[in-house]
Length: 297
Image 1: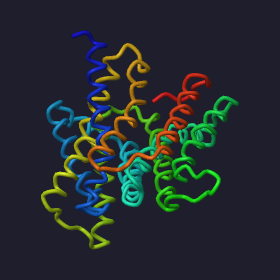
Image 2: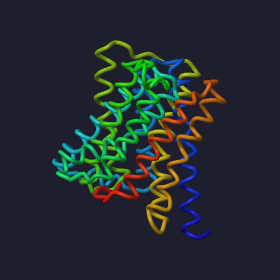
Image 3: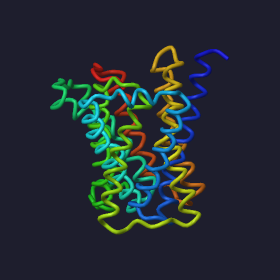
Image 4: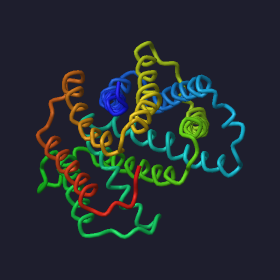
């Protein structure tokens, strides 16, 4: 099998699993609250990264970590998985899955906006237009299509969903500068994130053992949202001639996700969701192909 064919195969596997996690979030939240979903899914992913490190014989990289790298992992772990999923799971708990899912796809827009004050990058006219297009799409989704009535489906849910995009974008900006090997880096990040999550859930006194349905849900989320899917995506990027050849495939993920949400969750898909998503994707596409790119990821 040719390397590019392998790249497409790995990318499609990753996209498939990422397309299911919105549905998995919503189903899991029927059996566990968002704190327990966060705790157990993070624990699952941490075990998976540990197994991968063992198979790849990379524990020596953990032993050689410097004090500075420990601090970086502590900060990154605070952002992701702790804050990002803490906020995102609450958004899914409040909003329809289709709304939380599509609003979360604004993170590339947040990435561009945050790069201005943090990386001191300039933003051009095309970028401004692209951001405006995407934000209009998010506004359509948030208002359920009632763009003139300005009645949001859930103001709190919308704020949480949009906040998660800021956290994720900030994490990516910091991650760009962190040149460590990916699996060992993710293990350390998730180790710190799990410490924060454990402290929070113990202080809140809400730690419970889920029933069988909850266990299946958190295991699925931890495995396919936070764990091995990341490895599939890395393999896709490493085997591809250019990152663009596989990264562009990510645009099909939200549309596949909406199909799963409709079939499995039984949510009637709103016209406003589709229209809003098209605007969001159009804005991101405009930024990537017509604006001068200064950040790669």
